[in-house]
Amino acid sequence: MSIWEYANPKKFIATTTPVLPWVMWAAAVTLVVGLVWGFFFTPDDYRQGSTVKIFYLHVPAAMMAINIWVMMLVTSLIWLIRRHHVSALAAKAAGPIGIVMTLIALFTGAVWGQPIWGTWWVWDPRLTSFLILFLFYLGYMALWTAIEDDDTAADLTSVLCIVGSVFAVLSRYAVNFWNQGLHQGASLSLDAEENVADVFWYPALVCIAGFILLFVALVILRTHTEIRLRRARALETRMRA
Amino acid sequence: MIALLKRDLALAVRAGGGFGLGLAFFLIVIVLVPFGVGPQAELLTRIAPGILWVAALLAALLSLDRIFALDHEDGSLPLLATSPLPLEAVALVKGVAHWITTGLPLTLAAPALGFLLNLQPSAYGFLLITLLVGTPALSMIGTFGAALTVGLRRGGLLLSLLVLPLYIPTLIFGAEAVRRGADGFSATNALVLQGGITLGVFAFLPFATAAALRVNLR
Amino acid sequence: MMPDLGKYVVEVLSAYAVSIVLLLGLVWISVRAARKARETLAAVEARKEKRDG
Image 1: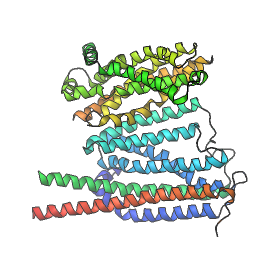
Image 2: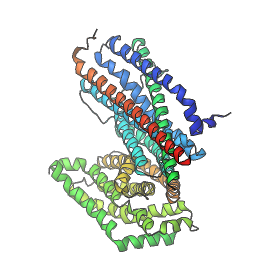
Image 3: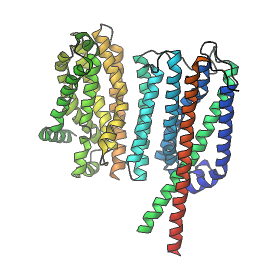
Image 4: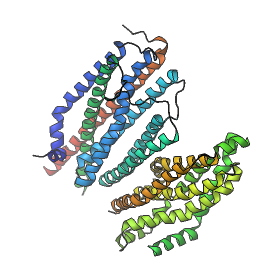
């Protein structure tokens, strides 16, 4: 019994289908609890006023946007090395979620930046890298939709994902070199001297957990969709033959 | 390898198109910029390095889809794949050929267009050097993008969407080096980093390009 | 019930509204696509059954 058994599409669907509703409800409950807690029951920050509440969306979305790309990189590698279809399809399923997360992070960031920094947008390293990440997501999904043959698409997008990851990291540092920015450093790291206070920290944690659960639920659901669509296509062609 | 390079160059010269077209596009973009931002000399001086770099990058983008398209259409791509030459070497040669037909002319033309944008006299050397160092990376990255989209009917637009984000680091370091050099600061850091990217790109991307080609030829 | 958002009402509310709309939209699209895929597959399999007898 190894973990690779779950790479069989049938086995994957059979195992994850009973889990899926639980994850979905867990995601919904955690998100609602976290956001309601953050929105209604936290004090305002003494400098930022009520805009701190935006961070219960901004921080988890930004974290997910990056982590989803990492997850796509890992599944792409698994596909290229071990040729498990579920892996490639999971990467495809995660793409649009990543796009939405990046959009949320960019939008909430802009809305927060308007009153606090006095501008919707600055060409700050963190903001710029997020925009670049967004472009990478777009290119990745565009390549998926452009290629008709499933395996070819999976291979090419995997290669693009790997090369893109290298360039995404390069861009991150290039952008740093190009402009020093307004954005503060990581505010949730555990070793930092000055961190956010507990009142903000706990609801933020719940929100992060909610976003992760939501992502897991959506990826499972969307991977099921891709598997079923591909199976339907395969059956169609076999019947026509 | 040399034979393939010669063949590609001969084809490019005979076909004419890509060669002159890229340069003409470069010229037109540079001419359009003052219409867009106004004719004030000091403003143009300030934005000239960036505009020249962006325009060169777009011009290099223009002929990318032809790197493999012609070979794909007349069926010589499968032949290249089965030839004794490894596909990685083919990818490398294609990148070099694209650079010689596009990157090099753009680099040589850039100083002339610098006059149009009132570029600072101190910047010309840096412009030439950064383009010389940076455009090979653009060609190689473009070859990779072309390999990804080789079988697609409407690959051109997709190609630019895929390739342009990959151009960002080269563009940043290139334009930054020119700007710093022109203002009398040290441009060494940016130049070295840009050179590093170019070398890295030439070391690794032929493999990715060859992998993409193999998938597309399957 | 509604917390006092001070002068940043528009910013905070729009951030929440847009994010929630985007998330719900994503969920809705995913669920709908999942249902469609299930139906398509079921239809194709049913046809196959009938043909193979």
